[in-house]
Length: 311
Image (tube, rainbow, N blue to C red; front, side, top):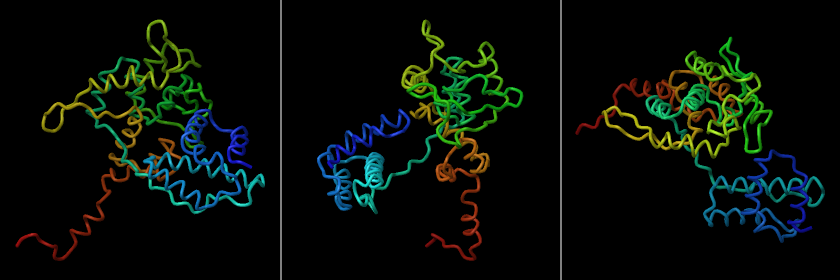
């Protein structure tokens, strides 16, 4: 059986989210099928797969894109084994390029305030919520009025706004969570939701003639977020006025986590607040903890005779 034939059968049988399907289709079109389409399934060896990976690296394909393409190939081959098309998968012990882990991009309090000041009132409330709850953009844009418990100052993350519409469940089981609201954020939210029906979306379009529609991520960035970022400035410790960093809306989530960790909130609590599936994701903020290097510095201070740079 040719790879392209088995891929077609495998693709038609998949059960995945629409946004995942779109990303996978692009990866397969660009990186998988151009190489493997005409191969006979049982002719593919482990070394053939490793050579394919090396070829992608030499073409300058990014490490994340290579990992996604390899994972798709591996899934295709595992399914072929399960269906007795091949005896064993060639995707075994394959070396992949390392993915560089970028430190989280977050705003200082002054930077965040300057962004909020540049936003129209409804978006100020939305971004206050982003900075103080760490909700993903899709969770903010999918929030319904009845998910806000004003008496207990809580909100519940359930629905998510996606390109395909409102999804009735969040990213993962941990993403479905209860989030506390600071008093000043709850006050702003109560003013915003006062005229809304209980089952209404909290944040919708405000453009005249098109108000009340479900938000689109790309349009919101282009029309709301990036203009505010372009106009926002803050003063550094030397009193110099500077533009705020050109970070995307997701940085509100990083900012929330960073502020909490710097104030001594445990990584465990931050993990549950943000709904991280893996603790390793939360550990990216560990270096911001007030006592992150306390033990190391204490050890150097206890040295009987420290090194000196004096001649």
